[in-house]
Image (cartoon, rainbow, N blue to C red; front, side, top):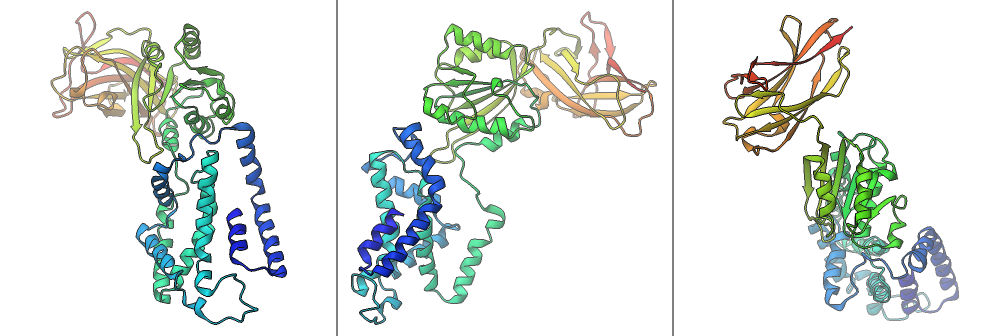
Length: 472
């Protein structure tokens, strides 16, 4: 708005009626920005007196890099067409043929002859950039989101470039620009994989799971807290988040959905004791890490890994300039009763198992089974695990097969624990009765079963009996 007013006064000669209409237009534009301007000013005067900490760096050495970055955020897609239209507009603004038509002196609104008035269309976006960078040198305020106000003037520039082409070329270019919106339109540019984190957690998140957010900078906690608290199927209470933060910034903390209940900025005994109480007896814990976490997180992770096993992990690297590496790990609590229950062959040992559902079942029900495994040596083959539900006469009615823990066994590390999680669907036509639940290991290549043995060495057959499920 300031750029529009400045360029108008510089280029347009004094005409009371014209200036009055322009004043009304500028006031209407200002009123439309009022809902954004008041909280924006409040953030500089109250919330962040020092400016936005993630604003573009106000330095002469980074000026060109900042311009290239802003152009990359705002240019028309496909990029080649955007560059064509922009270059056409920049060249035609100097020689726009309509500006060369004669004008009556009384009707000519500009202060300058036609050759100078042609620059009006370029002066507005240029003034926006100059004022934005000047303000940024005083207080950090320039971000791609704040500079979105330049888009109307860029649209006028693009329209000028497009108007110079034949109408058939205009139609083709508009189609090429509009068609990608159907499949590749970017609703926003994220500075972290927040939606991906939620998608990773959603299938296995259980209400009450603690979440450890391990990020060095305060602003990195804000979007993570919003996404995991608001976007998961079950809302996460603020008490279920533990923040490890390298630098405290009370102004940014106020941007969180709620002020942190659990916050540590060092590995003091008090902070570690709070973390122990935070974990309590939770069966599952999530660890979200940004930029390899804080510099003091080792003590917290040692405490976590002493009671929990990392069973699943994924990470996302850097995509954009402001996109730091993120990773998320799912931990499961180690069972208290770990001991060899059965051995399959000489090296594969079942340490513990749990049926997460009741033994009373219903047709069409899906039951969840978990088992913990360990090898004493690298297995000779890639063995598969079979979980079978059988009739009383031993005939199987349903089964779930696959590599234990979802990992080829020849990639296992001897002595390390592995958690296998699998589901078994009860057939919808299952008749009432008693159904033994059986477990076995076999060679995937030839189907040969590994013989099972009890801890005392007594044979247990090819399929070991775990429990009985009842369908009434």
